[in-house]
Length: 100
Image (cartoon, rainbow, N blue to C red; front, side, top):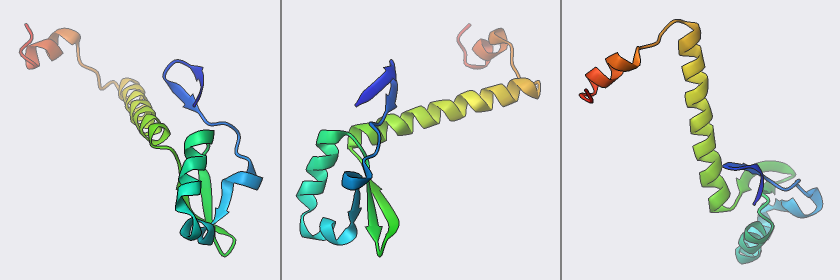
C-alpha cells in the first residue's frame, strides 16, 4: 500500500503485462491471482475475450477506498449545502441533538 499523505491510499502503477489476466487463468489458478494482488497491492483486471469484466483488489485497499469515497461525497455535499445557503448554526444543532 502506497500513501502520499496520511489516510490516503494510492495504488502502485498498473503493470499491464502482469495486472491484466484472462478469466480462464483465474479459473485455472485462483490462488496465484489472490497472492499476486496481496503481494503487489495493485488491482488486477480480469478479461473475457479481450474485454475487461471485473477487477480484483486487496480487501484493505477496497475498504480504504470505500471509506475515502464516502468521506469525499460528504465533503462535496457539505460544500454544495453551503453554496445553497443550507446551513445550521452550531447552537441549533446541539439543541436539536439534546447536547445543551
